[in-house]
Every structure is written in structure tokens, then in C-alpha cells.
Length: 222
View 1: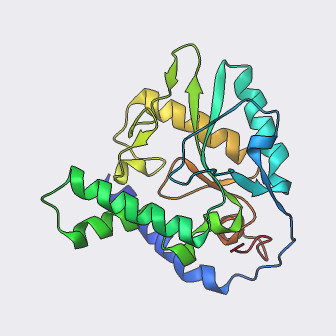
View 2 (view 1 turned 135 degrees about the horizontal axis):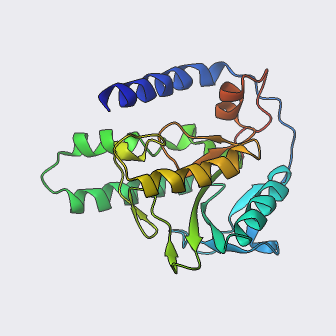
View 3 (view 1 turned 90 degrees about the vertical axis):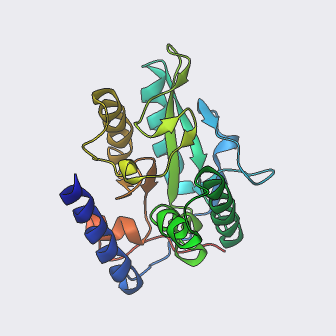
């Protein structure tokens, strides 16, 4: 387990060091709201009022195909988050910090910041600002619940290293459910985040690094 986590963290650090050097050839695909499609989706409530779950227009059909595959399995794609402004990202950081501190009162502020930093990027570094990132889970209609991914209780996710996509210390059921979610997005050309099984990138610099592309096609939209 330690070896796996160390390998993930080393690769993540390598990505962070590479990211500023990746050329962005912006293709100007506009932001559009997934709420204005006819796809069968569930939208996780946002900390922002009137959040529109915006993604690049190029990605809309990809989400639609994923949704249709899940429809046939009596499942529904849950969209947790999509484009986020820098201000939204800062609010998310602050809210998560406050919540984590309440749950772990004995931890110091520096320990909490270190844990959160594994999973929530600083505002100017978030891939969500590009419109090329989607956070997603899956709802099972037959079980009438959000599927078990090993670190979640419904929509609430406990941030720990078990969130790393291929962490060995999760149940067989959770591993199978992660494989379904990740497989659907990878099949549409997305890449799964190294530390978050629910986060998927397309077109941005993380995608370009993982796919060994010459350049990214989505830069930040602020």
C-alpha cells in the first residue's frame, strides 16, 4: 500500500512540475450547461447558488454517451462539479477546511492543510477552471443509492489516500464500481485524476501530460 501511494504521489508531483511548461493551444470551445441537455443526470447540490455545471461544448456528447450506457444498466450519472471559477475554488477550499477541522479537532491547521492539498488544488492551479474537468459518481436505481466507491457515504466523500483510484485497501465491490466509473470516462478520452477516482480531465494540461499530447486545447476561463 505504501509503495502504491508513494508512486502516485511521485507521479503527481512530476505532473505539477511539468504543467507550467505545457503549451496551451486554446480551441475556444464555449462553456455550456449540462443542465440544459436532455441527458438523464443527477446534479449534486453545489456550495454556490445557481451553479450551472458548465463544461466545454466539445465534451457534451461524451457525457451524453456515458449517461446512455448507464441508463441501460439502471444507473444514473451524478455530476458533482464541472467548471469552477477561481473564487469558487477558494470557497471550496475554505469550506472543506472548516468541515475537516470540525471532524478532526485534534489535528493542527498545518496537518489539515496538508491533507486537503492532496485533493483540492489552489485556485490558480485547478483544472476545473478550464471547463475541461468533471467530478462524477454513479447512482444505482435498483439499490436506490449512490454506489459504494470505498470512501463515500452517499455523496459525502471522506478525503484520504484511499481516494487514490487503485488503492489496494478497498472492498471488491468498491474496486468494481470504480472500474465502471473510470472505464466509462476513459472510454470517452478522459483521464482519471491520480488522486481522485471521481475526477476526470479532458483537453487541459493534465490530460495533455497523461495522453502525451503536444499541447493542451483548454486553458483557464476566469
